[in-house]
Structures are given as C-alpha cells and as structure tokens.
Length: 383
Ligand code: GAF
Image 1 (tube, rainbow, N blue to C red):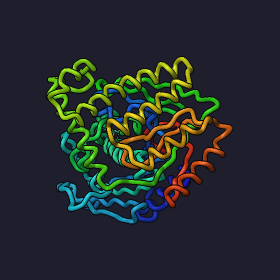
Image 2 (tube, helix red, strand yellow):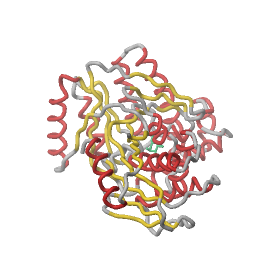
Image 3 (cartoon, helix red, strand yellow):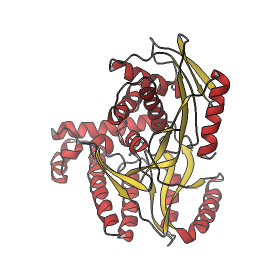
C-alpha cells in the first residue's frame, strides 16, 4: 500500500470510530547501510529512514480509558491510564504500553486518548516497524499534550519501551534513524555521543534493493539478547565501559580469559566499527568498489563471527557475489532472518529481481520478496 493510501485509510477509520479528525503522524522504518550490532556497544552505524512506515491518528478522549486500534492486527486495546502492567503475552500492545509508561515515568501525566494506526513496513523483515510504532506514538503524544520533549528524549523513551516492555536490549540505531531520517541521505551516527552527520547517498547508477528472505526465527529476540550479554561480559573482563573504548590489542590480552565464542563476538564488533569508518571514507572518495567490498566483509563477520545470519541470508549474499551488477550485499538488522541489502546497477535491476526470485524459489520452494527503497524524512506530522 502506498503511503498516501495508508494515511487516508487511517484518517477515515479514525473519523468513522471517533467522529472527529485526528492529529496525523507518520514514522518511517529504516535500512542500515553498514554497522550492525555496534549500536549497543556505543559504536558507529550508518542507517537511513525509508519510504515505508506507520501512519497514526490520535486525539484526546473524554473517556476514562484510552482506546487504540491496530488496523493491521485487526485488534484493539482499552488502556487504563493508571496501570501499565505488562500483559501475559508480547504483542503490539506492549509497544504502546511501554511508550506511555516510559513517558509517565518521566513525571508527565498522559490523559486518555483515542488512536488508530496502520503500517506498510513488512513485519519481521528487520526494517524496524517496532521503532516506527514507538516513535509515532511518543511523537504524537508529545504534540497532543505539549509535553515539551525533544526528539532525543523521544527516541530514548522508545528504546526504554523496547527494553522494559518488549524485553529486547536494543541499541539506539532504529529509533534514531526513524526519528531523524533525511530525504536522500543516510545518517552516520556515533551511538556514544548521538552526534550524527547527514550524508548524501549519490549512488547515481545504482539502486538500494532489499531481498526479504521472509524467514523469521523464533529465538531471534533471545539470541539478540545473548549477543548483548556476550559483549557486556567482554567489557567487564576488559574493565571498559563499552567495546567502543577497546582496541584489538586489549582484546588479544584477555583472549585466554574469555570463552572463544565471546572473544570472536568482541572481535566482530571492533572490526565492524572500523568498517563503518572505512565505508564513510569510501563514499566520500566515490570509491564504489570499496563500498561493495565492505558490505561483503560485514556479512562475512556477521555470519561467521557474530553468528546472526541464517542459511537463506547466506545463500542470497553468495548469489549476489556471482552477479557482476551487484556492488555489494549483506544481511541487514538484527539477523536470524529478514532482509539482505544489495547495491545493484540500475540498468540491471530487472535482471536482479528475476534471477534472485527464481534462484530462491528453486532452492527453498518458497518466495522471497524484493523491494527498492528510497531514503526519506524521519518522523513528522502530516498536514
Ligand atoms: C536491531 C536492534 F533493534 C538495533 O538496535 C541494532 O542492534 C540492530 O538490530 C543490529 O545492528 O535492529
């Protein structure tokens, strides 16, 4: 569904349910060019907001409860504004409760509201539909109730909602990209300081194309938290606040004292941080071959050292290596399924689509999904 249709659908449903027009907010999903699993290690990342996201309509309510409708889930929730206890199972409701609870913890009172939302980000594809949902709600509540929270506070609220209500120890990349995205730019972000640079992405003859394996492994969240834990343990051994402060020499010194599996996780993070810096230089020098190589190297590390890839993603990246019209490819996001990101020569995008769809189907007897993405603005009010 196009963004314009999405927005109209949400507006109309809100009008139909609540007899008034709601304040409309759009919050995008994100891609990440390079810098995976570095954000929660205070490292560097290179994400961008995309032209798919969540449209959310909201207004104040006179009722004692908030009423929130998810059009995608065909589900709704009545929320008691004094009780944000986690329900028995995780669902879209955890993100909503989490955001409201985290704002409340900061000393703000959120009176009841009515809300309708719907998205066009493929769920489970690693394109951060969850960050878009968190950001859209936080941003909308801030507008609605004049809370005077800045965007940096809003993304921290989204992140804490994820930690405390969803149970994923995520970094700040997804929320940052979804909030601060800029059209035709990617964001070179230092996750330690939150300083960022909007970098134009002049790929000229190339397109960014995602291939969604449509795979999502059940244990993805717990495996993600395990990686977070491994990195924490190395930091304790190193006596450092984060892996950002560590060097390869430091890591070699503690190698005998840590499990080999933890050591290689640390090694990956240090190498990936370096790759992000090299990627930025390669872009600045218009060295597209190096840009492509770095993507392949990132995938290699994610698959072999960090162990967050899966068979289908490795297959897609191996296939890309055989195609001269693909500059580079790697798995993207947390891993264990989701998408690969590919930089593909424009003139051969049709050929790419045909070849990848066919090869994937032949190998796995199921379809992958292929989409081009445009780099877009971050979270915003829609007039
Ligand atoms: C997920 C997380 F939410 C991000 O914070 C980041 O760690 C990413 O995985 C891996 O780079 O999207």
